Length: 433
Ligand code: GUN
Ligand code: ZN
Image: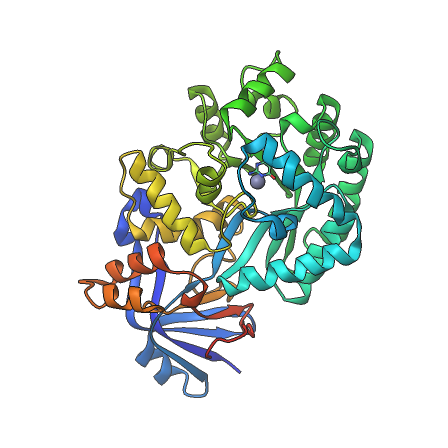
């Protein structure tokens, strides 16, 4: 039976960074018709109701209905160490991250955190995520098994590291390649799941490991590849010392076949002109992680400049370097960082980044990230007056974007009225239907 969701619907005709805010269409009394996991029609609610009298109607009133949020870079194994105090990147990895990641050789721990992570992500309206796992294949198995159980469209990869990390977390070029290959065979393209080949970042991989993973990507060009790039200046200097022959940080990846359109480069803050040019020419995904960049003290990503230059930019929490599971908080942090760089990003562009923009970097934009016929029905429904503070400001809003912006800046999981995954309402605890 078809479902008809009614509310204020938000869809995109184009990228608002290029086409302006008018690229976003909000229908005041809109409908989304869903059948067999897919969106089959969108338009004015009354017209859809008349054309589909047998559809089961869920009327969300004046709540906002959009595609579910797409978190393009997250570390699900860091769920339990989010908001750990007082360190910068390298110290933070050594003090908090690596000890926690060591625990993921235990399949029970991995399964417990995977369940907890997906509960939190869905409670915050995130329906697709691209996650790093740990060096243990068990951590990837736990992620994909739970994502499959929940019917999610999700991406992950086994994080590869063969140096500059504790012995218990280090692999070798051979084991990284062999285990990644086995996981690709088992999970890539299974149902709604996809695999990302995952060298953690240049400092924790030997040249031999980067070469092996570049060769694996060439063998499986339809996989994504995810890593980190130029997050902190100390890290950039470390990469220069470790790879003196490379022209810059990106060149390390480039030399080993790890630059491409399906490549996802987390952070990408301290870029040279050459790196910007090469990333744009390659059509690579630059993943902006704003709450992480302020929390770890990394720097101010040039969102407006990079988007205007035609770079493909996605948005991400980077949990647990990021300080929130919420893509609303993440949009707010992206707005604030852009403000510090002198640019005011329109809420339509922020919302696009958190949905269609991130989906585009993951090469999933033909399936998720927008409300349009043929797209998979992953949907979030937002209450635009979810707290007294938000409600009183939204009551003053002169147009819909002012109301949406208030929820972007001040909203959290209380704003998530409902989530639909693959055309099925998710049983979010404590939420009215
Ligand atoms: N660089 C390498 N590993 C990580 C990580 O786990 N988090 C962040 N924020 N940066 C990294
Ligand atoms: Zn990261």
